[in-house]
Amino acid sequence: MITIIASTNRPGSSTLKMAKYYQEQLQEKGVEANLLSLENLPPNLLQTDLYGKRSPEFSEIQKLITDTDKFLFIIPEYNGSYPGVLKVFIDACDFPESFYDKKAALVGVSSGKYGNIRGIDHFTGVCHYVHLNVMPLKLHISAIHKEFDKNGQLLHADTLKFTDEQIDKFIKF
Ligand SMILES: Cc1cc2nc3c(=O)[nH]c(=O)nc-3n(C[C@H](O)[C@H](O)[C@H](O)COP(=O)(O)O)c2cc1C
Image (spheres, rainbow, N blue to C red):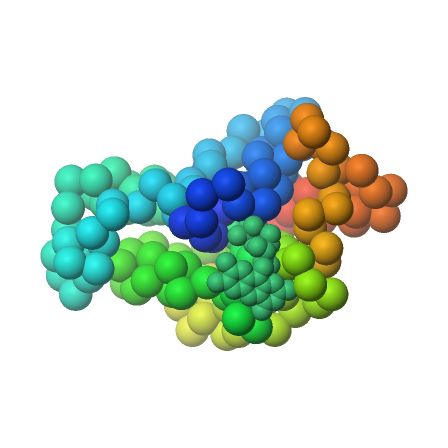
């Protein structure tokens, strides 16, 4: 089972738009994928779901993670790295079984020039620590606010080409 993780809780994020785009494209290639937006984490996660605590809301999310064997993380650049809420989410998930020996593809997005190169490197380190195997082809999409038309479709030929290549490789990974 595949799950796409839109790795921010910011309302109206470009990350969620991109996650929906990947979900649609996978579906067009005949592959179903779940979508988890970190906007839907329990609002009091810091109190209710860390260090051995577990709320009914997070139990549902944990089941989705446990049942997933391939993850696709769409990760925005926040202050030169990946969002803190993504690390809180990883810390809240059962360790080590949530991610151990599973697979992941990573996509960085940013409004600036670098497409979250550093954040994707930082998060790759976390993935390796939890034994989550990262696909070598990682994408870095800069100026994300210029990428979509009003229907949430990608506008630029090179982004279409590279996302398509990554999706095909992810299906085979
Ligand atoms: C807390 C915060 C920090 C950010 N830091 C950066 C940054 O370091 N570099 C950058 O290019 N964009 C930065 N941005 C802009 C995001 O890259 C931009 O909002 C983009 O649309 C992706 O994030 P989104 O999914 O929240 O929309 C930041 C945004 C927020 C909310």
